Structure formats: C-alpha cells, structure tokens
Length: 262
Image (tube, rainbow, N blue to C red):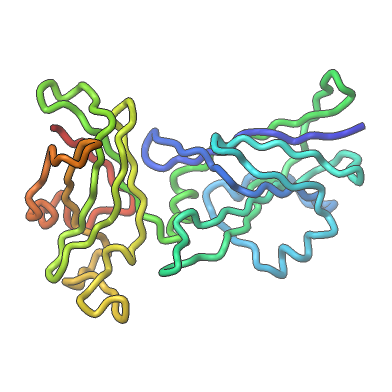
C-alpha cells in the first residue's frame, strides 16, 4: 500500500491578500511516539537549528516542492505504516542577492494524525491545505528583510476602471540621492507588487561602505513617491518627490498598500 500527501500552501500578506508559497520545500517526518498533535506553530515562528534538522533525518518519510500556485504532492517512503506525522517547511529568500543573502528557514508547520482516503489505484491519500496567518508570515518575512508595496492603478476619471500594462516605479526620497526601490507592471486588474529590501533605501554617498537611511529615522522605513510609464517608456504620471516626506508616505511599513490614479 502506497501513501501520498498533497495539498496547497499560501500565506496572508496584507488584509485579504494572499500569496501562494511557491518553490517551498515540504518535508514529511514520522512523529515521535508520545508526542501529541499540535497547532502551537500557528502564530509563532520557531526556526529549527541545523542540529535539530539533522536529528530528524532518521524519521524522514519524503520531500517535495510547491509549484508556482503553492501546490505540492509527495510520495511517502515504504517505511511508513501509518501514524502521526510532522510537516516541515524550508523557505528560501526569493530576494537573495550578492548584497544581502539570508539562509533558508526550516520550521515545523504542523504535527498531526492524517486521515487517509483510498483512491482508485490502491494508494492512500491525505490532503493538507494551509493558509498561514498575517502574524506568522510577517515574522518570516522580517527574517528575510523583505518589504512589499501592493497597489492598484486606476483611471483618474471614474476612480474605478483598472489600468493594465503600465510600469509603476517606487522611489525613496532622501537627502543625498533618491533610491530606486523597484518597479512592476500592472496586471489585468490594475494590480502591481514591488518587493525590495532595506538595503535598497539605506543608502548614503558612502555606499556600499556605509549604508543607513539618511536622515537617520527612528522608524526604519522609506519615504516613497511613484512614477508610471507606459510599455514604451513614455511618462504618464509623476508625483512630486515631496510626497515622500508627507505623513502618509514617510516611514511606510513593511507591507504598504496604495491606489494610484492616472
């Protein structure tokens, strides 16, 4: 009798906005006897050390990776004869660069007793779908120093019609030299997403020898303003850089949402 574990993983990024967890390594382990099922991992990130991971190797039952939509499917090894399992995830830094690189984070997502269902091929299947909370996912993103701008581009005429296919650029206003945070193309719904790291706005005239936001701020976030171009590079919308110094735009949080009208 064979066993398959499959499912879908996603995480809350902002309010009701969820992102699929793509290219995440999913490891299945046989749970230690006498250890109860647990959902204590729900809102607290507890990273496993290399030694802790190594100690679990003898209980390893299978490994798989999520696809771009967060789906995974794992064939459990023949050593498994039912019983409680642990599901661990290994998440890598998708924004890793030569300037700033973070090690993958390995953590236990759930310990449970699977309920197996027979399929037509004499194989038992168990499905585990999970949505990580905003509180939990924020902890992991902070470990990778990932900052995100989510937004919508809409028509300035009716404030409703989405504008697709335009390039939105985010810039951090600074005393010495403004920092380019990133750009993204709006989709069919007018939505865009820009991911960046603190090193992208903690720049000085001495960078890369010294990188720190100038002026030094008690709240470590950028002050942003935006530009929008069409696909041919023609400027359609440009905010005054002074916008980055306003109360609404100064020291924005790690996940910032905005509507832009052109």
